[in-house]
Image (cartoon, rainbow, N blue to C red; front, side):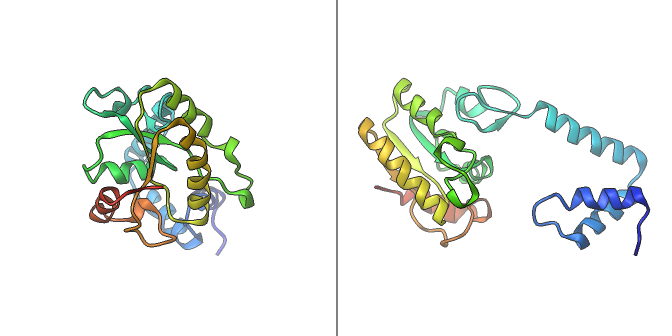
Length: 198
């Protein structure tokens, strides 16, 4: 079926989202067209505001509307522990468990030579700077047990060990190849509790 230009453009935009194929994009486009004009305007304004007012924290690189973010500026967090995650979705998954009370560092990716992502492409330098300027006693590596997660963990361990800081890794209560964001809170909580030094 040939859609009018505006609908075809709308479907094309929805297909840019991860895991959205042509059929899902079509359903979203037609759902949007059924909404009232005021609902569509409100939806568009919310997207623009989210994009405009969401930044990365200058300390941990988590997504936030403030910098430093709420976690970094909190006086109740344990500043001697930093949990290293690949992206903000993983941080949120860990926060939902209410088990971890330290700080975070969001790498904004994992080392993946196949995809052209090297150590300089993610926030490793910034993590090392934090280790020299803060009183950190432990780094917890909470990276997915994928090939990229393993490579990044090994690389970070080699860099952090000379600082004399304990490096631990969350326990493998998670299935290999799974992403943290899809794991349930209990599984993640047990993985945090059962972490071990590497």
